[in-house]
Image (cartoon, rainbow, N blue to C red; front, side, top):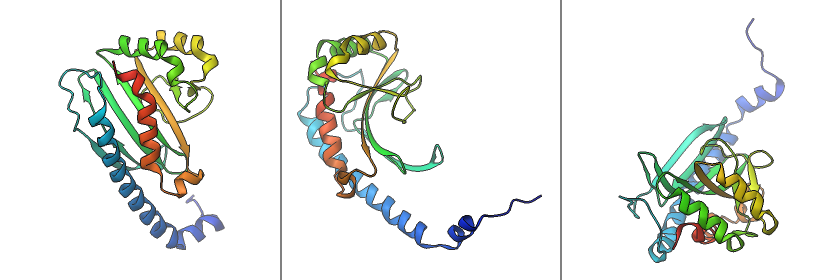
Length: 204
């Protein structure tokens, strides 16, 4: 038997306004990610980053998709380094219906030193809205219990214990879609703030 549509589904199918609005929103997000790239270029140029071999500080990537757990998304990777088993990337991701998330992604060469800097410089990182991803993969973007652990001043021992068991590191900071800063289009500022907050992990 063929599925029938609910009244709500029928109304949505007939409503052109949603997809016109979606197209406008996604175009604005792309413009904001382009502005984010420009803002981050200034930050990267002035930072003495600890990076893997063959790291190109100009490398970047814009991506747009329709199904991250069924929801549309866009992201900017900059700086971007994925090569062999090494990763050293900063991602600014807009996820429709969820949040904007900025993430430092580290894997491979130098990971022991990165983890050591997190512990040694813990109180420089704590209290800035940063969270440690607890997911078994780098590609999970949910937030909350079981997914992320807030980096607060009282959690140094807990964070250190989690880090000791991990082969990669992902540090994230979230801006909910309903936050006033999202409506004001402050994605570049939020991403720049987050990049500055994670610098103790990736600088000497």
